[in-house]
Length: 459
Ligand code: SUG
Image (cartoon, rainbow, N blue to C red; front, side, top):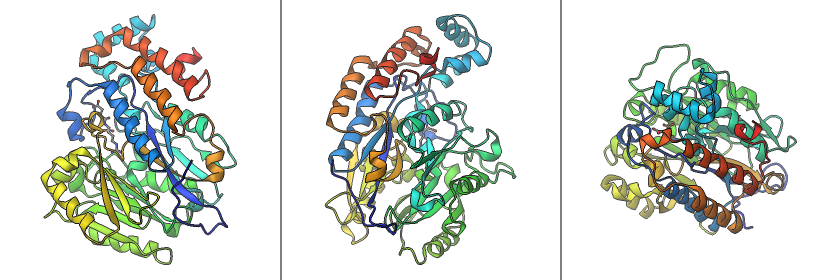
C-alpha cells in the first residue's frame, strides 16, 4: 500500500500521515427533515432518497482517495431503525408490532430512530493525534450529538466501532462520550481543526464553539457545540494548554445555516481555509491562531471574502465542507469539493482564481456525493480524520482500511441489500428492518467486526 507522507516527526523517525475514515451510508438513508438549522435537510424533507446510489457515491469517493495513495478507512453504519430506543420509551411486543405502534403514535419517532445520520463521520468523534497528547496515544472522544434527537442515538455504537477498529490500547485511547447534558453538547470533529507543520509533530488544536453552555442560546438556529465541550475534550486528551484554542463561531454563520464550523472553515497542515464570517471575532481569531502556532509553523490563512463568495453561496455549495489533502506527488494541497461547488457561479469562479494563484491550494477535484449533500453532508462531513503512522496502521483491528478487495466486497454487498429508493412512509415497513439486519449481519463478517457488534446480534 502506498501512503501519503508529509515529513518526519520530532518523535524520532516515525512517519505520520492522515487517514480518512468515511461513514458508510446506511440502508435507511432518507430525507427526514430532522435537523433544524441545516437548510438542505429542511429543503429536502419528504423527498425520495436513493440509498443504493448514496452508498455507492460514498464508496466511490473513498476509492478515489485510496487510489490517489491516501490511507482510507471506513466506519460501519449503525442499526436502524433503533428498536432499543423504541423499547426504552414504552413500546413492546414483536419487532414489527413495536414499529407499527410507534408509527401510529407518531411517525416522527420512527423517522428519528431510522436516520442514517451516522454516515457523517466528522461528527462521530473528536480525534487528537498522538503527538499532541500527553500520554503519547491517539485519543478519540465519541460525540454525544445531543442537540438533535436522531443523532443523540449514535455515541454508544460509535464507541463500539472505534473500539473494534482502534482496539490496541497501547496506541489508542477511546473515551466515552461526554455527559449527556446541554452544557457538554458535542458535535465531534466538525467543530475541531488542527494546524501542524507535519502530521506527526505537535500541532495546534482549535475547538470552535457556538454557545457558552452557562449562557443563553443566542441564535435563531441551534448552536450545537459549547465552549465547555472543547475545554473538557482538551483536558481529557491531555493537550498542552498553550497549543489549544477555543474560538467562537460567528453567530451570523449559524443564522445563515452553518450548523457546524466545517461548513465555513477547514484546516490542513499549515493552512486554514475559511470564510470571512467564520469566526465571531475575525481578527482576534487570526491573531490567536498565529500566536499559538508561533515557533511551530508559519500558518497560511486563506480567507474567502463575502464580496467574492457570499455566505449563502458558501453554505449552499459547501465550499468549505471540502477535504484539503496532501496527495503523494503533488506539492500543493488538493481540495476535494462537491459537484455543487462547480455549479455555483460564485464558488466556481472563486476556485478558478484560487488554483491559478500561487497559494497553498493547487488543485480542486469535484466529487458527486449528492445523496448526502441533500441532507447537508458534504465530502468533509463524510470523513473522520485520524493521524496514523506505520505502527498504528499495523495495529488496526477489523477490516476497515479500503483496498481493492474490500471495495469490491462492499460494492457487491450494497448492490445485494440496498433499496433503490425510500419514501417517507417506507420507514414504517417492517421488511426494511429485516433487510437491514440481514445486511448488517453480513457486514460484520465482511469487516471482521464480530458477531455481537450490533444490538440485534446481542439479542
Ligand atoms: O447533523 N444531517 C446532518 C448533517 C451532518 C453534516 N456534518 C458535518 N457538517 N460535519 C446533521 O444535520 C439530516 C437528517 C435528515 O433530515 O434526515 C442530518 O442529520
